[in-house]
Structures are given as structure tokens and as C-alpha cells.
Amino acid sequence: MGRIAWGRVLLGGIVAGVVFNAFEFLLHGRILAAALHSAMLALGKTPEQMAASQGMSMPLLVLWAFLACLLGIWLYASIRPRFGAGPKTAFVAAIATWFGVTLLPALVTVAFGLYPGGLVLYWVIGELIGLVVSILIGAWLYREA
Image 1: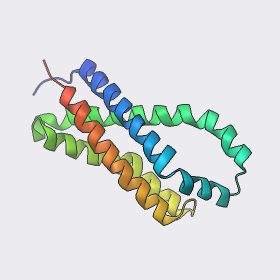
Image 2: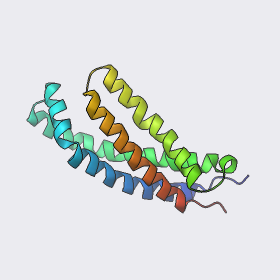
Image 3: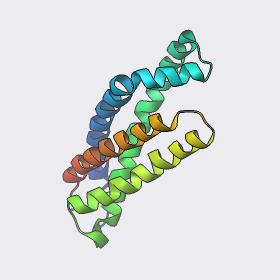
């Protein structure tokens, strides 16, 4: 059992983060944009408030996506000795990452009635696809010495 190659975790995480951020832009900025806008209006946010909060929230969401991908690649590197290297293990790491960073928080938004259930369903399915693709790409870059 080798040691984790932290430089490769960082490389894989950054590349996966770039891919995932592009996917997030498409998902939230294009595909779900109208539904998210309606949900924010239903929460009582004015268009001015939404525009002002985008300046603060965008950097945090980009950071969140990078951290989620770093977590996924670290998880891949951690379970690799037990599950073996390859796409199957990367898929397992991606599902576990999605469960922790997307599905569980999304359940909270539904429980508090913050977003409509249909919107959240598309959101979590979209992010599942994005994380699986991103973690597969990042894990492909991971190598141990």
C-alpha cells in the first residue's frame, strides 16, 4: 500500500474543479437559471438583492466546487489500495463525494422548503453527472510513485 501522492491529488483536484465549475456554470447559469430565479423571487429576494449577492456568492461557489473535487480525488486516492485503480473506484469516490456535498445539503433545502422539490431533483441529478465526469477525469491524472 503506497502513500498518497499529494501533488497528484492537488493536480487531479484542480483539473476536476475546472471541469466541474464549467459544468456548474452550464447547470445553474443556463439550464436551471430561470427556475432558480423564480425560487429566489418566491423566497422574497428582489432582483437587486439577487444581483448584489451574486458578487459575494460566485467566488464562494467556485471555491466550493474546487474543494468538492479535491475531496473526491483525495477519496479516490484513499480507497484506491482497497478497490484498485481505475474508473470503477473513481466512480465510487464520485458517488460518495456527491452524497456528502450535494445530496445531503439538498435534502436540507427541501426540508426547510427553500426550493421546490422538482428544482432540487434536477439540481442533484445534474451535479451527480458533473461530479462523476469531473472525478473520473481528475482520477485519471492520479498516479502513485
